[in-house]
Image (cartoon, rainbow, N blue to C red; front, side, top):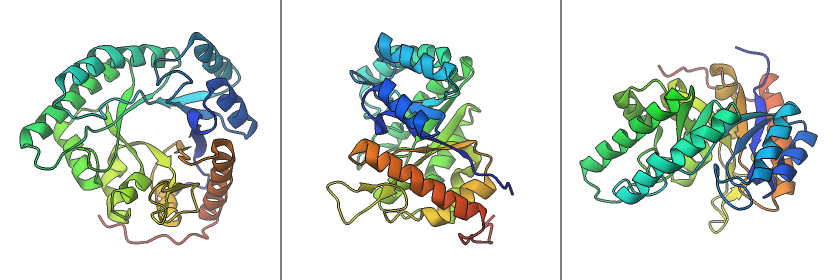
Length: 282
């Protein structure tokens, strides 16, 4: 059991739409770990030369880019034109810019899964994941698939089983417990144990079902059981960082509040003030 908390990071566009402003603001808050997703005019790797320079300047000042998220595999796997474009164009460009920033993790999603889809859809999704993982691995990175409701990567046990079946060492998970909660399943210890061997990162936000039109709040203010999840992540993984994904506005105010709440929750966790289930479940 470690006695220090993981480093905290944030997705830049959760602080401000402008990459330079987001980096400067978050670094003023004491953060040095960042995930890159949206720029002012497009999603990574479609950053402007000015945005690229801003990232390089932040890195020179001590920032680390922990992950990039080009938005791959958010469509259906049967859309062959989109899949070809993502694998043959977007992914190589994302890898190229990620290597420039010395990024260890590239985040993708798990393809929308529609009701009644044939088993062949699962096989095509697995083939796409493996092909992308091979490309990412050649660049010395890992591919982390993020869970979304009604995607092939969704519920922890099924997602872990798929990754185990594919068996590529560079294929991991970027776990978002609040997304799981949003999809109708309150995250449990069994869910954590299912994803633990594959964790490359965790997104931290909070689900608030009483407001379905805007169901997100800064962590610690919604209903996702972070008081249970955080001790598992702190004491039972070697994750070097956790990444805040605020998802509510006003961005700067809510992100700063999420950071303060998460620091408080983690400090309590280290002090042993958050109860932890002693049952390992293995």
